[in-house]
Image 1 (cartoon, rainbow, N blue to C red):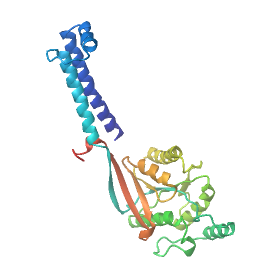
Image 2 (image 1 turned 90 degrees about the vertical axis):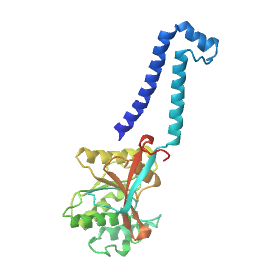
Image 3 (image 1 turned 60 degrees about the horizontal axis):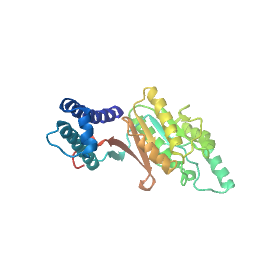
Image 4 (image 1 turned 60 degrees about the vertical axis):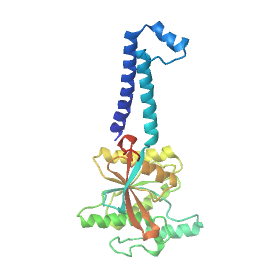
Length: 279
């Protein structure tokens, strides 16, 4: 898509250059440079229908004005596909939230972490979620992982990677998240967390982290990536969604108010040249 956009950009400029070259060529044969200065400076660009250089230049300016109007009427757009239940994807990417909601007392935090450390989840069961996870932000990513694990079993496959991006505030919980997920699926070395913490309030930091995960997987030949935007901050959701415009990248969202439905969205960016007139 990047190459198509660059081609469109250079095509438009090629048209402009052709008009300028044509105007210059006609003027070269029609008059001398002094005559051009007389028109430009002495008469303040007065219109002269018998002057081919002025005619060509005027046509060029009209063409540029028409192009500007056309583009102002046809904005770039984003088309959203799907929104239904997510399709299986072997590689899932998550923003790691803390395992608890809000800021509970230290005693409650310690009790919750101890309970989670002893969890042995069974994603094959409809009631896999224990009471300890009822109000935890981890219920959403675990629901998504369990969902894809069930899809994988139906097609005779396994999850190949659960990739977590942690913030300075949540990086200490990455080992526990890894323990809970791998114990539930019976797979070792499945959960991989970026070694450096990411500031979830920094657009550039989030972008670099997501691109690092995507780029690493794509260099290994992976063509299907699913970015979960349920966790993290609002900035995480916006940046991650924008980075999935490329082919093969999709986003998912766990709708807690819809029975923890795991929905998939495929975003596609369309430049004005690809939109129908009036779109």
